[in-house]
Image (cartoon, rainbow, N blue to C red; front, top):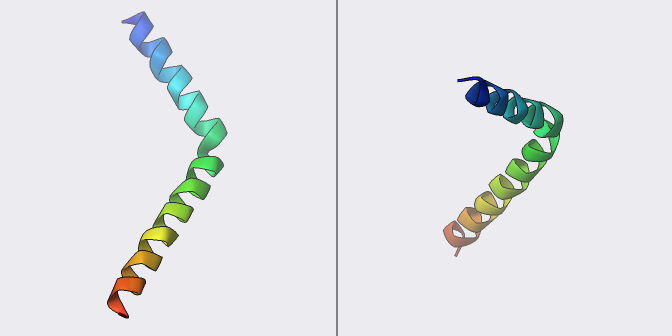
Length: 43
């Protein structure tokens, strides 16, 4: 149980440290999907 708790804490720390990078990547992916959608809709 201690190992699971330590793993959860370290994963939480990594997410806390890198949340802005994940948000940046998610924004780029969303923009690519939106561009592809608009590109096919305007055809």
